[in-house]
Image (cartoon, rainbow, N blue to C red; front, side):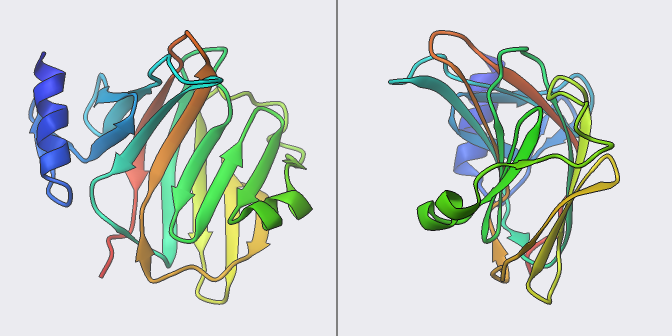
Length: 190
C-alpha cells in the first residue's frame, strides 16, 4: 500500500522529487510498477504481466533531461526471461538485449538498421549481469553508447535540447519481468 501512495504522489508531482524512506524517489510509471530499491538511488521496475502479446513496464524519470551531455545508468535484469531493455532519451531509443544493440527513431530507420551485434568485450555479458550504460549525446549530431566503458555503438542523430529519459522492459505475457535501475546520472534540462 505504501508504494501505491508513493506512486500516486509521483504521478501528481512530475518534475518534483518525492521522498520514499528518506531517499529521493525520482521515477514514475506509465505501465507496470516502479518501486524503491534496497538502497537510495535505486528502483525496481516490474512489468504488469498482462498485454496482448507481451508484458510491459516503464520507469520514467520525473524531470526532463538535457539533450546534450552524458546520461548514465546502471541496469540489471532481475528475471532471466526479461525481454529487451529500451532506454528512451531525447531524440530516440536505445534497444539492448544480451547479444545486440539498436537505435530506434522511426519505423523506417529501424527497418534499415535494426539490431547490431555487440562489439567484443561486451558481447558475452547478459542482461542479468549488471551493466553500466552511458549515452554521450554530443552537440555535433553524434550519439555514442558505452556499456561498461566499452563503446558499443555510434550513431548520427541530432537530439533536441531536452526530453524524456525512461527505461522500458518487456517480458512474456503472464509473467512479471523485473529490472533494477540504479546509480543514474542525468543532466538536468536547462
